[in-house]
Structure formats: structure tokens, C-alpha cells
Image (cartoon, rainbow, N blue to C red; front, side, top):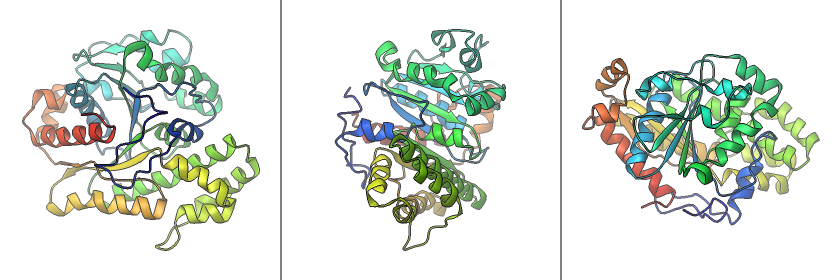
Length: 347
């Protein structure tokens, strides 16, 4: 598999994704200072977010891992819903000995928190209910530097092809920072106005933290402070996007760096629990909005129809796509997984 630095993202299935020669450099530029990748030979990272809880992020993360594993890819699932973790309930995982907090508190090694699953191609890092971890990351982010370094090294050490980050709800900066790690960011929503509004609110905070990270990496601390103070109050319109506003705030040259970092990522709306034919159009409308108002690269990767079988899977505490392989949910996720593999140039 090609490394991230040399990859030119596949544009056949996802129009508008700009190929940047030094992908790794611009991708890393937008990460928070405590996440310091140095080796471009890292797994492809998929962040599953959305801002609102109850939209199916964990359900999709777990079952998507299974679908990618069927494409003969090794997948590492990471539960980053800190304080409310529940990813293990979808994986038929037995007793868990160590959690993410055990590693971050220096109690165990990184290898100790890699939990096996029933699939030989899927490993799992369990989160837990310890909300103090968020406080620890927010007040002393250096505690997680080694964690991210170990994650990036999983391709070399364990042959991992994909890392899937299952994120928590809300618009906290650390959650948006986790989302910034993506090469592909899945924005999970359900076809309800409040869910869509929360997704846009999440992206607004994401752009704020993303821009601040880039400017601080470039040593532009005064302009970073200016963006922190003024960007949250901005509302885009048809002829004036976030990138237009940033250019007025910080100038064309620095905005080009931010735009180049945006272009190393694809934000893909995924509409879950669609019930009507019009629901499927929401992802296309959101993609258009994300491109033209937020300035991010965006394209739909599919939709998932409402399926009553979901609650049965929850009661069984297992992977829905394995328990009900012919369900509509499973068929829809097959297409999503295929689209993801095509996006990354896998056949």
C-alpha cells in the first residue's frame, strides 16, 4: 500500500477532491500540537462524528469495520466517545481487561489495550466511562502524544490498513481535533432538522479549531488569537464563505495553507435511518453546502435506510451485518464500504 505522502487521492468517484503533491505535510499541518506524526507511512484514518448523540455513530463504526475487513483490510477501531463509550456492545467483545484510560494514565502498555474481536482482521481499543480523561487531555494534552504516535505506527507494527475513530457527541475542541485526524471524515446525521443543524454546528467548531491549529503551526499566534475571537460569530452566506472570511482576517497566503490542509481530507455526510425517498437527497444537499459555505472537500458516500432489524441487533449485542447479512442496513453499508475503498484507490 502506498504511503500517505505519495498518495494522490482517487478522484474518479469523488469529484472535487484536489490532489496535493505533499499530502502528508498539509494533512499534518492542521493537527493539534500534541499530535505529532513524523512518518507518512500510516494507516488511512476514518473519523466518525456528527455533533449530536443518538445518530448511530458507534453502530456505523463497528459494522463498517466488519465490511472493510471483508475487503481483506485490517482495521483498528478506537472508541473515543470518552465518558460514554459503548462501542464494545456492538462487537460481541467479552470481558475487557484494560481501557484507554489505563494507557493514558501510564498503567499499561499500548499493546495491552489492543483487544481482539471475533474477526481476525479487526482489533479494538475500548474507551470507558472515565470522564476525567477528557479533563486530562484538555488540561495536559501531552499525556496523549505517545498514544497517537503508537496509533500511527500500527501500520508498521501490526499491518493495520484503516483506523476508525468513533467520536463522542458535542462540539468540544478535543472532539473536533480528533475529527481533524481524518483522511475521510464521516459526518453522521439522521433526517431530522435538529440533527442536520447540529452537524453544521459541529463543522463550524471544526473549522475554528482547524484554522487555529494551522496558524499556530506556522507561528502566527496573533492571527490565531484573532481567528479564535472573531470566527465563532461569523455566519456564511451564498456569496461569502468561511474561507472568504478567513482571507479577509488573515490574508490570502495564510488562507492558502488552510485551504491546502482542507484539501487533504474529505468530509462525507452519511444519512442514517432514511425512511422516505427525499431523505436520500439530504446528503447531496449537505455536500453542496459543505463545499460552498464551509470550503471543505465533500461528497456523499451513501445512505442507510431505516431497518427495524437494528434494535434486534442491539439486544443481541453483536455485529448487525454478521447477524443479519441480508438486511437493508447490511446492503447499504456494503455500498458505503465499497465507496470508501474506491476513494482510497483500493480495488
